Length: 423
Ligand SMILES: [Zn+2]
Image (cartoon, rainbow, N blue to C red):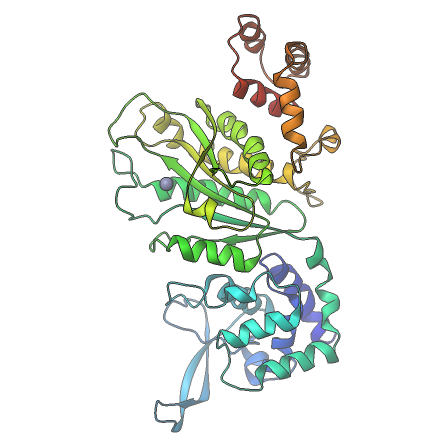
């Protein structure tokens, strides 16, 4: 197996899933490791000259390296590089650098590399980010892509759905905590992680995380939406948990927000699919889909929603929020809603198939869901049939039939039952 054949599956697996073009990774590998023959490649499986750095706890490989001081004088020093058991490690690290930035800047200078479908644009973005000091680096990369026809490894990019996920705030953001000092970001983060894990069960999904995954930095909202826009996300979900006055009370419930006035139909459809699922996952009151003027939904160019999975200062809701299985279910419910909206297919071997056949008959794009729902909401006969069918199929319990007879069902209940039955 030659070098390109060995590197390509790793570039596809780790690059494609994170919005980095496989052709770019392979071209960099060819150039920087001299097709796997460099000393670093042979002795440390390090194709990209990735230095150990202070945070690295793995094995290191020391190599005499030319360094330039600030006056331009070249000296040779022993530098520690990361040593990997196989090529996979260095590919993962390179991709991580592009998705998360340098780690010492509060923005991601490589964000422009992400989500490109044209290798020349990806290479231009890498150059603009100052990746290499060699002024001919970009030209050399383009030569490798063309010489080895590397774009054939990018083909799958066309069918990819890009989802930007955002756990709101940072762990220490003032005012974002329960009266017992539990941090909102910690709840949001658990939901986000469950959602991301569930989305990875589907084919052709790329995920970009917009907040700091450690929670330490409250990344400015503008940076978050700029990155989502630059990446060309197909949808954005910002995960939150609510607070009323910051004092314990018995208020509560789940709500999903779209941008007031300017929300796209797609945003509204996604919110309509997801809201009742969060309600079911958390077992909390349904406050419905609402609209508000919010940075994350206003400044993002793609369909965007902001979820509030319960109130941190509600004595009712906090019980659910302290239950990690519920937070996990909330994340999975949101992933499932996205999967339905984007008609995602489970990967072969993924645990279960939540999108059933019936779903294929539903067109959720641009207003069709809304029409179906309006139709249902205006027809008590259809509601009765939905409830009978749902109970028969075991989608929900007989309590809903009682509530229907007593006319106690709100429209969000009906929508929730509809979603539960056709899940
Ligand atoms: Zn929040």
